[in-house]
Length: 219
Ligand SMILES: [Zn+2]
Image 1: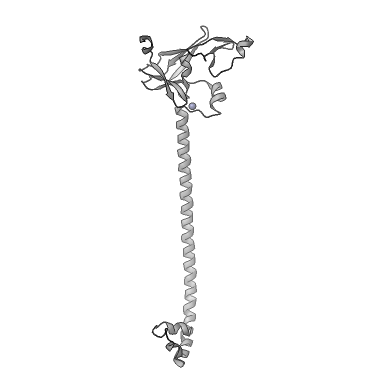
Image 2 (image 1 turned 180 degrees about the vertical axis):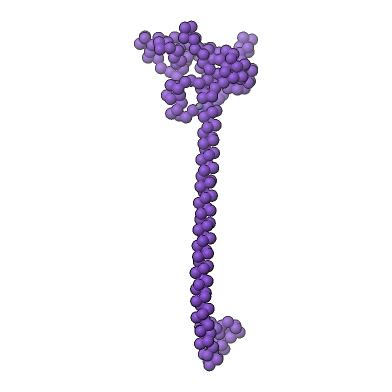
């Protein structure tokens, strides 16, 4: 079908299901595809009752029901920073999707569905367009960095506290040791006497060869 191959797009897999992708370079400003379907007149009860995701309101009165199979443009997904736009001619009741950037083959074609659609359908589930994903990724990375920063800060604080505690402990030890030396001096004096006076403990079996043993025993 040569007519089909002329079209610069194809339906393909996208992040959110199906999407429309460029198969040829599409220049900025070019018409890509028409969004079409039966006209619904909101003044008619039957028309007004129609409800689906592909309704495209073009004026207060008229809405295009784009849910028909032939409307290939219904595959175009929303993007907050799109490469195309919906160009609405209210008079002609026509919707044209037009490139607002140069689009390269392989690029997904998208346009901004508008705030109303965004609020109703996309915000509750989280918009999955590239711009929003990027924003979310950046936020996640920032949150991770902040967490790491706080963790490092807490670790440093703990390290400082540990060092301080160790210093305090060693200072307390030093004070204790000082006290000990003074008391052990008098001990030594007093212990010198019994050691000389009674050599018995020195010769106790096992302990005999150890030079420190007598001091221990004396204390
Ligand atoms: Zn988005």
